[in-house]
Image (cartoon, rainbow, N blue to C red; front, side, top):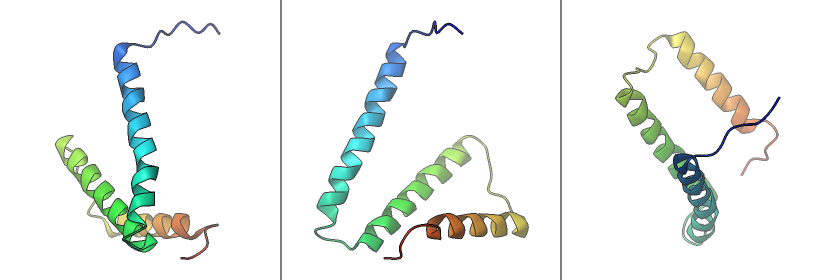
Length: 89
């Protein structure tokens, strides 16, 4: 299958933004470990991500589910993925 896709300027800018966000994340984590505990840093990162994703979701017109079964599945997935294979802090 031939590859005929040529990256656009938007593609390159998106890649540059990704590199900046990803690279600075490690730098800020290293700096913040001097003042905060690892649990505090993780909690803040999760909180910021949840706020950003919720704002994005509502901007797109999506809504959070109200069914208890959905939240039970979210709880199961969240607790199993964060505890599987990782040592506790």
